Amino acid sequence: GYTIKPWGPLTFKVYTKEGKTLEYGNPSMVDSYFPVRLNYPNIEYASLVRHLGWALTRVTDVNNNFVDYTYHSNLTYTPGYYNYSNVHVTSISYGNYTGGTKEVVGKMDFLYTERANPYTTYIDGMETSSQYLLDKIEVRGINDLLTDTYEMSYAAQDDNDFLMQIKKVNSSGEFVLPLEFEWSPMSYPYAHSGYLIFGPTPAFATPQDAAHFEPTHYG
Image 1 (cartoon, rainbow, N blue to C red):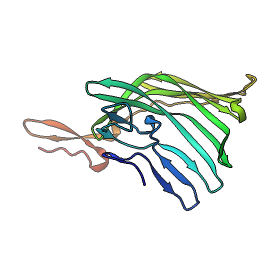
Image 2 (cartoon, rainbow, N blue to C red):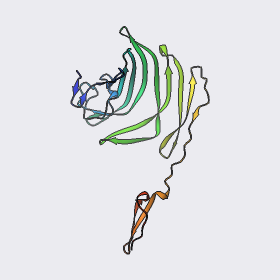
Image 3 (cartoon, rainbow, N blue to C red):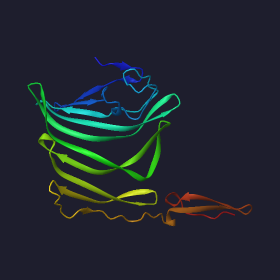
Image 4 (cartoon, rainbow, N blue to C red):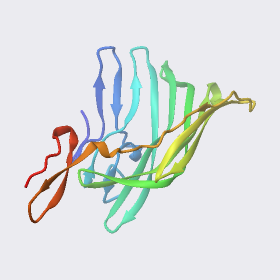
């Protein structure tokens, strides 16, 4: 059975028709619970106050192949609580269990840079933050040898970070022309708004959605 805490199970599994097993949450990796707010940093003994989700930590199939996910978050302390924010995946590894031995045959490491304009959102009244942008993806083979790197470039404008290009570089430093992205400015034409004017006195205007009515004058 599963170890049940006041906020739910430490882990749970999902079994698919294809024979895959998906595991969510990992007691040895507190960052796999996101976002969390704890009285103590040790997940085994924590009195969890707020809990929004369990991250996918492993996928296995009937042939003992696996995909493992590793996460990281920022730990901060406010009076009475430890807070975890900016949860993000740091690596995905692939391999097989043969004779009880775990063999990793491939891995992707995710490296991040800080956003020019970090932002905060709220889920169910709980504050969550997004502080990082994906900077590089390092692809590694057997024996953790680096084979390729994907480098991301961004441009900051109007409190947003726009992905501008992705460049693939091999282990020898060679690269091809990057994949580039172009962005068009967003616009909100006045055709999408209208007014109802009430009169004769006093007169005032109320913005409305023009898609739902034709502007009409009263009075």
